[in-house]
Length: 313
Ligand code: RIB
Image (cartoon, rainbow, N blue to C red; front, side, top):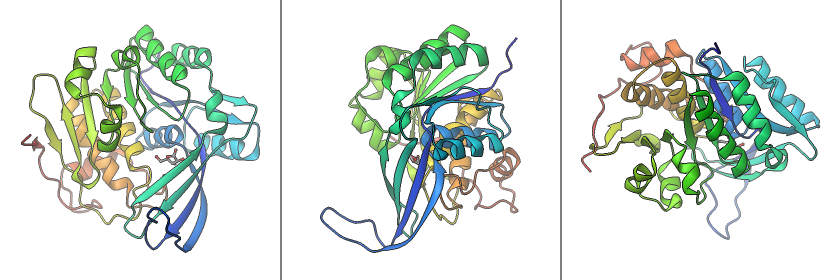
């Protein structure tokens, strides 16, 4: 019997992080205050966040046969992630330019590189060999759509849950959406999907969790009022990767057997705590740290956590 674990199917990038006094508007030139290189990629960030929470975690992705790929995979290995299902392909490892302002807001430009070569057969095999009932399969969209579809099919085949984080957003085919137990966009991505939650439910999506930055997240379920899960009030340093920690923490909580509401609370707290460090993986919270904050422990990094409630919509 395969142990319940989190399997993350997604991208691995090298992040080139530029700090600016304010994010440039169209046509504007702004000075750079500093630059650093960091490990990134939505999939790799999610895998690292899941492992930091103590979950057995497998990363399925593709890197180039270059120093950046070796460094990215080595960093995940050190973080405790199983990297045996990482493909080495021709071409450079993915890169991202991340621009961050003093409030921690950012924008990101991605060069997909090797991520674009991840093969569906490889994804299907990696999942069927590593996951079983009780596992959660988490995919995002910096990899080919047929690889994401293969993840959804394999999840169903092994009896695991399938969570899709549609980032970066694009229009998605109905059969891929039908494979999703949970869809987890941010509010911008939900609009870009051009599909109202009611239509997603008709296709078979079990629930939609919409992340809303410092406002927290909303859990939408068919036939029920939405529930708001507030974010923790923390000293925000950098919001890069907060969504990655959120979705990883949600999958970790589900794998641990938490119900939907508790998993959303857990994810909202973990996502908030992750913004206290610089870079996408500057602070990946542990399970005890998240649970301390959930109970309002004054030793935790954030202000007491308000109870979840209806969004009023
Ligand atoms: O979500 C943050 C991530 O998006 C960055 O690490 C960058 O690599 C892009 O994938």
